[in-house]
Length: 152
Image (cartoon, rainbow, N blue to C red; front, top):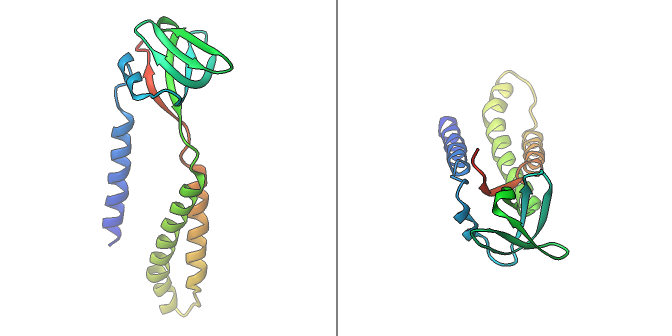
């Protein structure tokens, strides 16, 4: 049972690593953006410009911040999309995983402690797992999704 859970977690981590390894050196990746999408551009002088995507051509990318701005392709180091804020969803998923882990620990290690004559409160194990999982869920995620990055 535990080996199966470990295999599932490792498989998910491997799939996530493969997904992040996508080729981001192609300018045509900007086709993934739609007009109005939140996006950002890191320029050659390392200044960051964020706004709503308008369009792109072979010459540059246009976005609307306070006003419409076009950044020439040769000045673009990276184009990214900020990740959506879904912290509550991550907290709930983390808490659910924590409850499952706490239940497994209460059933396995708790039985061992009970056999040794110690009083084990399974509810504390489950609640502790839920709290720990919720905390990890709140701290994970976020970041940016790179759409285009100039190859070196």
